[in-house]
Length: 107
Image (cartoon, rainbow, N blue to C red; front, side, top):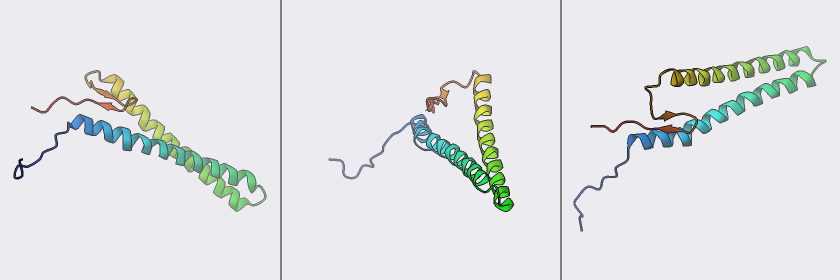
């Protein structure tokens, strides 16, 4: 029985990064896409429902505009990431579609 020895749990960095990517980052990206789409649809609903009130119609236009801006920014970042990963073939072990990050072992 080793009461006085320190217990150490070994985990590789690549498994930690892959788990963070799969469990936190990817669901967060999907949530942000859903929120931006809901914001756009809410603005469209406001715009269509309030045709007689110009002030609420303008608010609906603003919501639609910012929803499209949010979706465009997120799609742009996703596209830039895809272009970078496909341009540099030396980055091996990184697959954002599968959520896999395989880093080399630390010496």
